[in-house]
Image 1: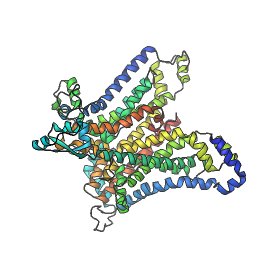
Image 2 (image 1 turned 30 degrees about the vertical axis):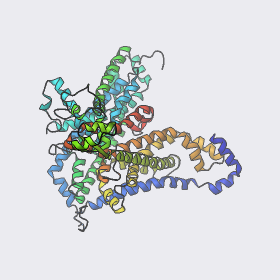
Image 3 (image 1 turned 90 degrees about the vertical axis):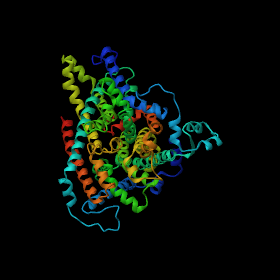
Image 4 (image 1 turned 135 degrees about the vertical axis):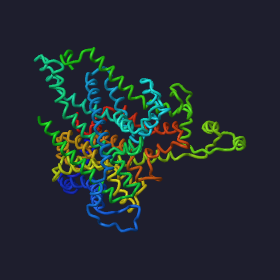
Length: 315
Length: 312
């Protein structure tokens, strides 16, 4: 259809003329195509980043515009790195990262491995399992808060049903011991499917003939699992861990809706703490320095990790 | 698949694997099913102990979600008979409906900002992806990495200067501001995914078109675009879902005019913090489109989920 129309259009004028009049050079087209994207990213990603760096050396407060901000050098950085409360937030974040990733890898890989047995209807059930990760984290956090209510919540009821405890005897969101676990549970519920999908792609990338060769060599199923399946899926699994790590380091919406950082500051992850400093206490300069520290941390850790990942891939 | 393969799992192991996966799927659905049920409960049923699975369904939650109501005296209620079924529901609490709530407006904002930013991300993203895929661009790898790395920044960190910038430019709490912002966030994923899709289209198609006298631009939109349509559509769904679900920027940069549904839904809770059915109704209406989309388009979504890291 398009071919015939275009043929007519092309036939109407001699070819060389068309190209001379209407055809921009490839080089020009390349730049015209890329420029808007680069411009948008410069305006909304890079310019703000540079501005944040500049703000981080001042004592600027965004709610007091009349006062001229002063240049205070590295004082913000010094204050953050020596603040013991911030190390507590970092610990809370580390706890959250470690356990969400550990559980998601364990459950996600197991599920992928089971789904890869290709039982009837596996694609339908895969889709159902994937549903939670497609939803809005803030809304998910909000309705899990309902499930976690001590007297009326379904979660407490189910736990009580199986353990014989009183459903009002424990508060998932209100207790210092349980709150860090309550956010781990919801994040695991929501994001295990992501790890599962990547593992599944890894499992499916293993060609059958490798297993066939192993069968011929009479390698046991267990041995095949540890010498073929695990090493072949590992790069995929590591990639999943990278994505989950970056995402959960930035975690804000889900946890803010669930616990708001409480009780006390037991679930106050770094992003929530940052939001407090920037938009509640309005210490803009200080929060900017904090943001830069977080960014450098993620970027640094991610780069080291990618190097390790590439080594595994090369093997 | 061959009729017999030594690597094919046995019937028994298929059966065990299938049942375990189904059990997991059912457990994982409980929270979602519960929230949908709660939307049709009365407030007292929603907070009853033990939790009620069987109850008398009511549209109260939905009525409360979409309306604002005031309590009235018995005389007023007697003098003004209920006008419709929704009015009748709120009469039980000696209330009358005085007008629509903000939910409709917030939902519409989500639609405008979601579709606006998706269109823009796809438009710009397709152009950039085509250029990266077909032309030699100096420092292309660095540029691509730079585009992707912008996603590593925590949204709150980016929000500080954006907040200041938008305040100066008058873009705070505007649809345009949010559309531009979501486009900037989405475009990295869009370029990355779309480049993968366009890479897979054989160059020979365009080259043939160029020989036939098409300009480069004609070859792009008459040959490449139709070929990339599926890829473009699945990338678009991803951008749409991100913009639809986004909360951090929305809560910090919007308050009234351009506020989307995610920051609004948690505020529905109502007097005394007891209106869980209305919150559940809001969550259901907001989440259902995404769930339906996911089920209908499952084949095309996979690649977006895995960030294009997994090609096939």
